[in-house]
Image 1: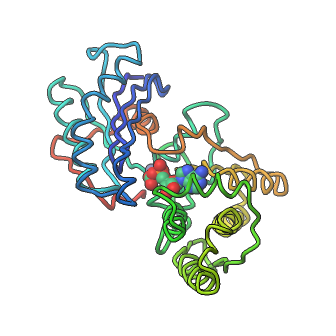
Image 2 (image 1 turned 180 degrees about the horizontal axis):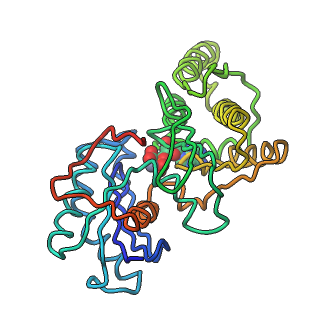
Length: 333
Ligand code: KG4
Ligand code: ZN
């Protein structure tokens, strides 16, 4: 039982939250918009923006929680995985805050936090459950045995699902991040173009083949008709989305069959995708699963989910020392 200030700065969102006894009281996210003009996140620009935003975002989170700075009993932060320069801002802020207030410091794995975002509000999955975590940097199927006990059953060998959306969008001239835009444009299109769906024998994923086949398909079609993308944008988006979403669900369904687990959750930025949500519900009906889909605000990066993991670590007395440092490739287990 504690009041925890949580900080998340792993990529391009500066976020702070106040979590009391595992409940998210406030969750402020400031998204860095300047990366749009570069067509992707520029690490150096991201860390400088975190430096400017961190103090106002923390102040806003404390104010919105209705509590006072002096009520904070522990401070949590994302140790990794993520961009080193971005993580460094959150880690340094948290260490300084904990030292100044003489309160415990709690390190959190960003991917564990995406999974535990499901405990921000009911209905809660029951253990053990499977979680497909799909974001801009990660794609993995995790078996969640308890709040702090997770095993990776499969993960991407190359690009992440969100990266596949973003890179495919870039090839069609869409701004970064293209995932939400592809979702929107696909709603008025049909998946009439076929791209090969990778079906790996194990539970891992690979998205680089899809990316290459889209690249060559566009090259061929544009040679025949330079206006191909503009004339077929909605159908192209629907086709790309269908391929990525079906690839994700193919392995998830296999994992459910192999483990016999029927509690199935999705998490991370790509879990906001409407086609993924709809097809998951269809699969849930056919397989008698209980499917769990978080609120959109809890799918994308936010400090609330960091605070939830920190709550369970606090209960077990799992604290970090002042010599803790960020870890760009911090594994889940
Ligand atoms: O979890 P997240 O906010 O940040 C990371 O940890 O990466 O995920 C961001 C990713 C981006 O690649 C973005 O294009 C994708 O999630 N994304 C979507 C949608 N909303 C966000 N992809 C497809 N459909 C969406 N609706
Ligand atoms: Zn994330």
